[in-house]
Image (cartoon, rainbow over all chains, first blue to last red):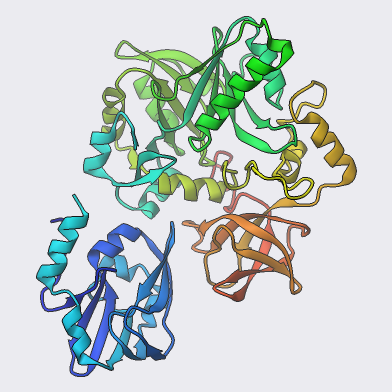
Amino acid sequence: MKYEVKEGLYYTKEHEWLKIEDDTGIVGITHYASEELGDIAFIELPKPGKVEKGGKMCEIESVKAVSDIYAPISGEIIEANDELTDSPELINKDPYSAWIAKIKIGDREELDELLSAQEYTEYLESITE
Amino acid sequence: MKKLKLYEWHKTHAKLGEYAGWQMPLWYSSVKNEHLAVRNNVGVFDVSHMTEIYVEGTDALTFLQYVATADVSVPPPVSATYTTFLNERGGIKDEGLIYNLGDTYMIVCDAVAMEKLYSWLETVRGSIALFGDADVTIVNKTFDISLLSVQGPNAYKIAQELFSIDINEMWWFQCRKTEYQGAPVILSKSGYTGENGFELFLESDPLPLWEPIVNKGVTPCGLAARDTLRIEAGYTLYGHETAEKQVLSQPFDEYTPLHAGFHLWEFSPIKWEKDFIGKKALEIQKEVGIDKKLVYIQMVDKGIPREGYEIYKNGTCIGVVTSGTQSVLSGTGIAIGYTSEGESGDEIDIIIRGEPKKAEIVTPPFYDPAKYGAFREV
């Protein structure tokens, strides 16, 4: 497996990761997603406010294309990582450090619908050769 | 999915993606690395997906003069001519180079319109009375020929090390027949990056040529960098700036060479003194007026213009983006598009995610030609 999947995080099939810290979920994109996108050139940071699980949170642009980032969980966006505005390439450098948004979790039961590191690894294996 | 002869090599070294039905290397290290390698040193592209069509026979030149807009009968030593191929409405069927190889002509175009172009050539040959008994043979060589493109300020040094011919003696767009370890190779001084460079056409296995090039420290570059480089240089691409509309909704709702401004070039690909398909439509268009033109756009605000984004001026929509990316050199958004008005220096807006973002119409290329590109001050 050439893509890093970090233990202890939740994952989506849209290749977002979610780290839980108390009642807050920290969201980023996975190593696989950053490799697929290539050089990330621009990110439109999410605006504070309510989001639904699976709803579009913001857009990320690589040199080549525009992609949507979806909220892995419902709740309220309370913070976005301003550092990425001037340095979106941080996501390529370390996708598990370069978080995008913090969401105050609305419904913890939704966590059960997300993938574990093990499940996400298996999912990646199923979609890559 | 169509595969390049070097597919196995690319598969182990590159991120692959689909383009025009081909499995192509998109990037090996990263778009930025590869882009900068071409601007600052030298890179190599496997662009074997490109269309090559041979036009042979004693009437080949007569045929090409009719089907292509440019004067193909260029005097030596130049052996390639940039041209467009038009439909009867003046719409661009394809754009590319026609090489005079001595014993045959070779059309080289992007891969997107390969089948359409080939069948168009066959249609013209078969249906036009002029060519009823003509000696013209059209052969699609795309799947036989590999095309490797070596680009960058240090490209010619690589050519000098690999081949016995002196590339510095050659003209831009000139090609020479040579060989590498006994395998015939056509070496053409040409490229699509804005830099100096050369391109190698060969029918034998390209690996024995590709590997020594890479082993000389030439950076392998994928299709993504090819696109960012050509946009930065201000070059058009079929399917974006040049395209044929299948349904004609209004007069001149085609992209014609006059919209693209090709007729204004010093070496124009439109030869008015000869007859060619689409000429009448272009002449009428010239009289009626040209309702849109190709413009080059640099963002002032943050944001990357993309194909399909609307262009506004003083609150009115004046056009649309046909290609856009982030300039690797400057970090700003750059684009090519069509507008109904606007001159270099004009302030405009690009609608990005529903919001107008400030931009400016500029003159290509999108880099300082004293510092980058084929005409840089060494």
